[in-house]
Structure formats: C-alpha cells, structure tokens
Image: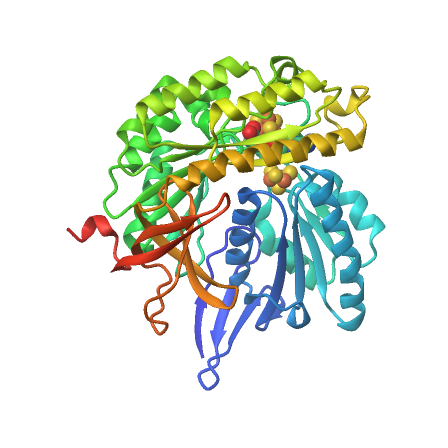
Length: 486
Ligand code: SAH
Ligand code: SF4
Ligand code: F3S
C-alpha cells in the first residue's frame, strides 16, 4: 500500500492509501475512513459563488469526494446559496424541500448549505429543516473539510458563519483541472452599502490580497497549470488594494507582463472607483479584455441618490466617454434595477434615455426586490408590483433593439475566440466561445471528429441577433497560447 500525507491546514491530517490491485483511493483522517464518495452541488448567484463552489469541490477531493451531476448517486448534497433577490432565494428553498425526499430514499445522505443565505440565516435553517445537517458562511469555505469530517464523525446540526478577522486576505487559487480559464479572487466583501443590497451583510468588509501574492499566484497558474485566461473576481474589484496602497490598475499592468497569459478580465465594478489611471490601463494593457461590465442601476439622479450610489448619470456617461476614448474598441455592459422604491414614471424614462445614450452591448436587468436588513427595505414603497414588472419589460425591449443594431456591425468581421463548449442548436452540433470583448459566437465544426474544446480559433461572424452570433471557422490555432505561436 502506498501512503502519503494530504495537504490540508487545520484539524486532523488525512492519510491516503491506494489499493495496488483496484487502484481505489481511501483517505484516513483521524479515526475516520473516507472511501470514494460523490458530492452533488447546486450553485446559485454570482460568479463569486460559482468560483467558491469550485474551491469547495477542490478541497473535498482531499476527503475523497468527486463531483457528480447526478443527484441519485450523491453521498453528499451541498447548496451554495444566493440572497441577492427573492427569485434566487425561492429557487433554493424549493430545491431544499425536494432534497428531503432524496434523503428519505438514501440512508446517510449528508446535506449542507453554504453561501450568502447560509451566512445570514444558516442557524435558523438548520433548526427548521430536519434534513439539513450543517450550514457554513461565505468566509469559512476553506475549512469545509473540517466541517464534513465533523458530520461524518456523527456531530451534525451545526452552523459555522464566523468572519475571518485576519488583517490580510490570503489564499491560493484552486482551479478545476484541464481548463485554461481561471477565476482569481483578488478582493472579498463590499463597503459600499447601496441601500437595496444585501451583499455587504453576506460577504463582510472589503479585504484585498496583496499584489505580490496575486502576481505570484497567476504566474504559477500560467506556468504550471496551463492557464491562459484569468478573470479577477470581487464584488467591487476596482476598489482592490486601497487598504494596502495598491490598485487594480497597477495589478493589471503587472499581470499584463506574464508570458503565456492571453486574456485578463475583471468583474464586477462600481462606477465610483473607476479611476483615470484604470481608464488609461484599458488603452495600455495588451491582454486586458475589451469588455467592461459597469453596473449603473438607474439613469435617474434622484433614484441613484436613494440607492446611495454616489454618482450621477452624467458622471457615469462621462466615464463611458473616457473609456471609449482610451480604448475605441471597448464593449460596455451594465446592470439595471427596474422599479426601485417609489420610482416615478419620469425617473423610469431617465433610465430609458440613459440606455439610448450609453449603447450597451448587453444588460442584466431585475425588478427591485426588497432585502431584509437593508435600508431600502425600511423605506415605505408605494409603487405597485405590476408597474415594476411593466417597467422591466419596457427596459428589456428597448435594450434588445439597441443591442440588435450593435450586433449587426459584427457581421463579416473575424474574431479570435477560445472554444469553451459545444451545444446542440436545433439538431446541429455547434461549438461555442467568447470573443475578447465577451460576445458569444457559435460555429459549426468543419470536421465533427475533432474535439475543439479549449482551442483558439478565428471565426468570421456570418449572422447576429441581439443575443448571440453565428460564425464560420477561418483558422484553428490549437491549444497553445496564440501569442507564443509567432
Ligand atoms: N457589486 C456589483 C453588483 C453586485 S449584485 C455592483 O455594485 O454593481 C449584482 C446585481 O444585482 C446588482 O448590480 C444589482 O443590479 C442587482 N441587485 C442587487 N440587489 C438587488 C435587489 N435588492 N433587487 C434587485 N436587484 C438587485
Ligand atoms: Fe451591493 Fe452596492 Fe456592494 Fe455592489 S457595490 S455589492 S450593489 S452594496
Ligand atoms: Fe448572491 Fe451572494 Fe453573489 S447574495 S450575487 S451569491 S455575493
């Protein structure tokens, strides 16, 4: 039997043994044995949460868990929850209800919840739902194995949602094997306290990783793990580094120097923290994506004030002008909240106007959803739900017309994309990837036999709609970073 030590930090360390005949791995940790098991995970919410789920899954590999898409074969079910709107909340609650039956069918099925709902309501939920074994908050995911160990040791019905009080935010990025794309967390939390938003309560105070750590992390990912594209993640990435006298602009310029790294994206940004230095970087950094998602929320100065966004529509549009001057090819997108507390028809029309002026490539738009604890939830709201819904539909219809026109300008042009996946579109197999500026392009393979996943290809756009583009393959450059091919 070959034995080795695992790599975890706290708690009992695991010992791994491999059966020389079957090759089956068994992990022994303290008094417990962990045979191969399967975890089924359901993630709601933002990219941060999806990234956290990947991180949790990577930790769980040390306890012999592999991820499954089939609920039936799961030994453990984990929900990574989102509290940002009622809709995501409700979807989670209905699935949590369904899992009750799965637990009845399978003896020993472990059920846990993490993420933003668990951070604020974990304790109550564990008490309320008999079939829920444990809950864990957003700041303790790196200790997931200790919690799972505790459950398998027979000590369940607990919640851990303490905040990490350490001065620095320091982690090492964990990535799914085989993918050249990595999400790299650079800042956590949010200090902005927009009046409608639950995030500061579910993710805590802003804390940034040191620039030297991020640069070393990304260099390693590129050199040893084949990463070619990174997305820098945070709830408010452009306030990155403030507490350490560092900045996102500087970080991007440093990452831009890494050989073999092809593309840098970052998400998501608050307009207040978009500095002139950062705008200039959009013109200077060769590897920075020519797409920026900059949530505006509303086109009305009075609504923005009620939201405590700390900028005016004029300031926001001025930022877009400056960004377009620095990087003429930049593609911009945004988030809009329709029907915020007591929004008047005039205020709503100001948002419609802003959409016309801004010419966004796409938007995410939502009806305002009051969240407990937030300041907006305490404001008296006289706007009926049907008007909120109608305004959302009006915003979306207006934007679709705008983006349909923008997308038509792509037809006939050739774009370089990293192929991410394929899908069946109306019975036809098509590969799919995103342009540097984050637009999805589908194309039909010339040869069905070739697996083009993670190839860089040049694709000429042949037709476009407001939501996607169709193209034809011009050149297949293979998997190597194109910048190293010359
Ligand atoms: N940090 C980012 C956004 C994070 S939340 C920013 O400041 O822009 C993602 C989006 O969800 C927000 O941009 C907002 O449009 C939406 N959102 C947040 N709280 C909401 C609420 N209570 N109701 C409706 N939409 C909300
Ligand atoms: Fe929420 Fe505002 Fe923070 Fe964005 S900046 S996460 S909208 S509080
Ligand atoms: Fe939702 Fe939490 Fe992200 S509330 S949007 S999962 S930060």
